[in-house]
Amino acid sequence: GATTSRDCINHDIVSNKISIVKKAMQYHSASSKKESTVEALKSVGGAEIAAIVGGILEASERDVPILIDGFIVTVAGMIACKIDPQVCRCLLFATKSTEVGQQVALKNIAGIAKDQRIPEIA
Image 1 (cartoon, one colour):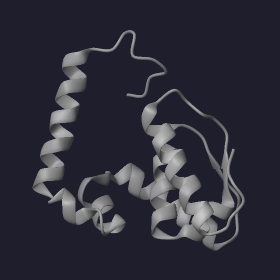
Image 2 (image 1 turned 90 degrees about the vertical axis):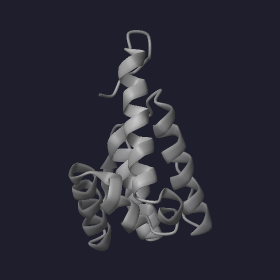
Image 3 (image 1 turned 45 degrees about the vertical axis):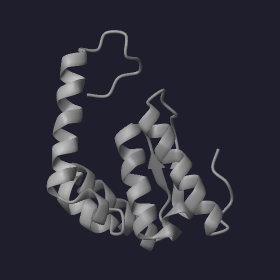
């Protein structure tokens, strides 16, 4: 699960998770998935993230503000922005964790917003 630090983390469990993700990416030809966010989501995204992405896309289509809170929801927001860059205009960020993955996702979203000339996220 998500943590705020790696002080009490079991490194064997983390290594196993990394191995599983690498095998899944190899199985689904990860290099070809970079071209299609939807295909990557279908192949390795998981039902929960897919559902969150769908909700974000729908809310954006209806011009409803979207509160992004936490690492997993930030990743779902990034995926939604890659599918439809106009999603960026509806996102409101509640937290910024120490998770490196969330920081990467936030940078990706900021880059998409910049490309779309949407005001910078903080």
